[in-house]
Image (cartoon, rainbow, N blue to C red):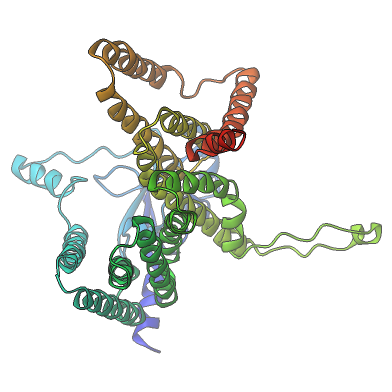
Length: 466
């Protein structure tokens, strides 16, 4: 038997001494089962009437001497219970009181050590990893300052290749997904920089959007290689690839369509809104799940449908949630950058377009149940609103700034503060939900004509008409 197998066996179970009153029992329990599922198997060791007695005081809880009751949703392994430890079974309404401290200094020291924000070995590791990533990323602006274009391109490309190789070695060595994914992420940054340097080397006077398209293309290639090398970091790479695809779409629109950067950004924003509709189905497919085919003939209605294993559904369902969040984060990251770029157009219609898109994204965010996905959708909205206010303020008179910006911002803040206290948990009338759906539909319909106006299509058509 290998050492890894022995360690797995020692982690898979623990022999604990359970104490209830004057009775005790030594029981071996699995380390991967929550306490809520273990308790019904432990109580019969203390007599058949113990379970009925639990109804008199809201059930039983488990706790160490001097500690609060354990979280019943956690396993013995997560709680750090080891062989030989004593666990007390107490009524839920009458748990063991904490032990008083004889030494105040010792008590204060224990609270400092166990504080949620105390420094731990894990946080030291995270700090060092972050510093390593920052040190490696510092090379990106240094490469851009190299005056010889060919040398700068060679440095960026070689660094990207070396970092991708290092990421693959770290992933294969079992050192962990986080360092491998971090190295691959830094390699993507160098590859993106290499793409920008490549187009500058070929054509020094190339438009900005052409540079963006080439940089995004090489970044996506590095992401594909990183995904193959570090398979466990698929969620991170899917989110980054989504942002890269939207950015590449903006670059291609500017390079091939000959439009300015703000207009290309507007096109990419609309494409990202369309892509957001397909996020649930795309996440479902990426998780590996497949829906059974619908019957096409009456005889197929009687066909038996094979059940899907519970563990498989739970595993793939969790993957679906992760991919959904990753896709929304990728779209949100791209929109976070593109929406302020649209405002560089400097026209009233660009501001109206950004405001309507922000309203549509805010209305869509109510459908998202994941915290990560919802904030990924709301962050571009907040950024767009702030950018609109900051961009419009310089062209307004002092009176218009106060009446048109300052007072509405204060009113919005006051309304949000009141809503934060009264709205959560309150059941709304059905017609309010229907009204929001209608507004969302109208806002979505308004995006396309506003995009055409920003692109100058209507002015071009009027010019054709003379």
